[in-house]
Image (cartoon, rainbow, N blue to C red; front, side, top):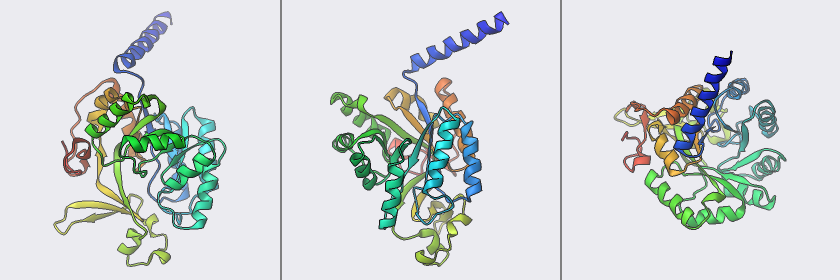
Amino acid sequence: MAINCRYIALFIIFSLSTFEILGKYMKFSLGPNLFFWPKTDVEQFYQQAKTSSADIIYLGETVCSKRRELKAKDWLGLGRELAQDTNKQIAISTMTLLESPAEIMTLKKLCDNGDLLVEANDLSAVQIMHDLNMPFVAGPAINCYNLSTLKVLLKQGMTRWLMPVELSGDWLNTILTQASQENIRDKFECEVFAWGHLPLAYSARCFTARSEDRPKDDCQYCCINYPQGRKMNSREGEQVFVLNGIQTMSAYQYNLINEVTQLNAMGVDIVRISADNEQAFTQLDKFKQQLLKPSKHSLDENNECNGFWHKIAGMSVA
């Protein structure tokens, strides 16, 4: 028993030393599920998330208010359950495109929840959080592309910023360097979307309903028939997009596993794994292992990409 305890102690010391060499401990988050799933599937997924290696869990409806398998009170209840049952940080993600007074009312309920961190994906949420004098995460749909915008969001109460998904590593490094020069880098955490279908664009029209020749107002909630979105190919048969209601996503899954060491060296605080499906839990483990023991991973050029990070065509592999 004494020998075992000694080995355990040595392992802990080694692990801590490794993180000291690498720099400060980089956390890993599970992003919100962007697709429309039945309530039971959502609940089962987050039961698995409880025991996952994620340090932070985001949850909530970010795409369409007509997706009512879980209402605002259900998302808040699920978030509080996760917070109570785990040591993970739990955050509620808000809608990206608001189109009605009812959606604003729901947004206010989510923002003024009393105990859970909020990821703001629209400037309406930013303003509400500012009025409440509460900290918030600036989500990927907040178009923050430069230091001036970062300063504005910081004044509004932002404590974490998720880089827009289509921007490059060089661009991020420049912004973080500028933030350090302005002595504001320690005022916010930086999070990077590193795995999953990229959320690229939003529209007032519903692409999935249109693909079934349905009007948006009578969509029959058809998104639920496509738990991984509806794939759209070019006339040449090449994968182009995934249609997800009013959201357009990349057909390929973004994968920055080979850039984990670079992300850590740049001072990125959090790496986000999107909750596309149960693969997300495996990816969380792989990304964490990559931080401790870096190795070269081969990407599938027919299903994966990392082009945006390297300033080449987005769906390419560097």
